[in-house]
Image 1 (cartoon, rainbow, N blue to C red):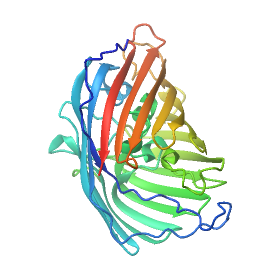
Image 2: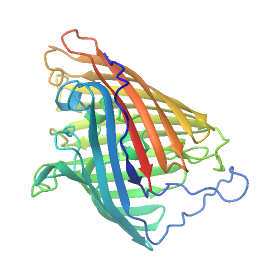
Image 3: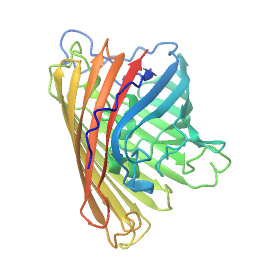
Length: 383
């Protein structure tokens, strides 16, 4: 399905500057086995956030519209496209922090149905994060405003740090990314808890209080040492680099997402040792009441290894997505889609320069539904 089109050149520059703080500080002392973890030393201010992403789409066959499409390129074939521009500010002083980010995409790029933060005045612009936070202690934090939904491991990873150009199909279709509401967070070292109440409105408009609500909870555990949400970004100088470490997480969401009485469940795990990182995740969603209510579910596994330490990472992906009849178009019943893919990411100059190439091929078991996939080359420059 995906044809090699060598004539497409990846001459796309991507400027990205992210200022996300690590959830865990490095352990003090020479032995990473210390049970106590130091309080994070939060800087008073954070730099400007600027992300520009562009793609060379080598080939693409979109899987349709709606949840099935996910983040597929909107058109088939090859093209050069503007993927994402994100700009904002992240400042803090003492226990207080404020963060505001605007994101723009190309005018013909469609958001997945569960993606939020959209502005009614411009369909291609949205507010990803715009919140104020009070963090008097690592064990207690209160955040209010537009922010990430604490559901699904993949949705906690910033787009700049994704190991493949786009997320797996099921995660994009079932896991919301940004909404407006409040979050209570507690980092207890081995355990990290986030509980939130959010508006179901996918746009930042006057329907925030009338579109319904949902609550979500995410609990993750790092039993041996800090793993975080992007462990592959830990360098060889990290004191935990040589230790086998793993994490596990569970996510629950209930309320109005795209429809009332939506129950979503998720489970995830990560394993890291030196250059090797393996991640896996399952998400399921049940809408309405009764056994006849539509249910969607999916899973993804992504093993990866740095072929050259902190320079070149190879990642493979295997995923499965089951869609109910209402999402699968011509199919009279639920359909299963299996996908495989992989990607290479090259890091240079302390990861300030990144070039990523990846592909994903999908096959749907129902012959009436077309196969789909994409092959994308993405360049990133982090200032």
